[in-house]
Image 1 (cartoon, rainbow, N blue to C red):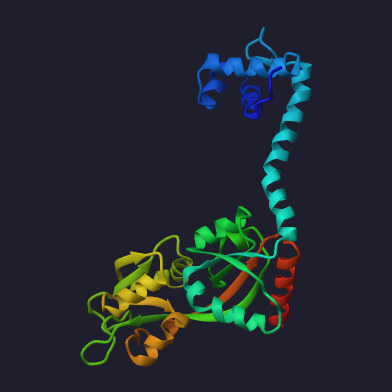
Image 2: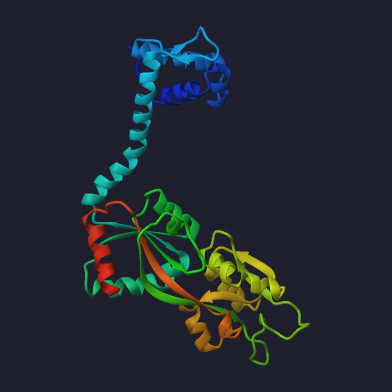
Length: 305
């Protein structure tokens, strides 16, 4: 007896959409004879013809029309299976699955968790540390339950666009900083005197959430001051290292450079209007999280009141 091959459903839909064997075979990246054999195998498994081959383009038979709905239901159901399996596992899991941007993983998250643990048992955590774009993708795909990231009212994100619930769990500031020169002044300053050499700026890559915020808030000002990007990287920690080396000016989270500023290794390199006030947000999955994760979320909301 022939066994059902799930990929035959995609073959069936391709042919049902076009009615043309050659076009459907090309769409499915195979030769027409191979494609025709797969359609015939599906019909043999069902025990009836799905297409009337006497007409051009090929038309669905009554059984084919019926199977069109069945195929859609089967495909939709199959696509839901991984998420449903994760939901079943999460319902009984105690490990919380987090994605957090690199800067917050190192600076904010440890202290924030310690504060929560004084009021709520957190339990084990699995953390993925990455740039914001990939953290967002992890939550959109259901691979994690929570995302911890910086945010700003003028900068939109994928998670906002898809209405993922969030809570503000902290604040931060993007501070333009530079290493000092021999006179103890910023070696690189954005808002210098007219006619001065444009500031050398250490930039974030397009995947960086901090870079996204910086472009939304100060992109026009950077263009106006003819700032010159001399180095680009994903991570604030890398830009900090380059700033300490005197390579240029960088907008860095105060949580990352507070000690550098206190010790004079870095200096504020623009007036206060160049600073960017940030929120630290925790986003959660829109679906049920399971007992441990839901309890954690409720603890987060209670701590913010």
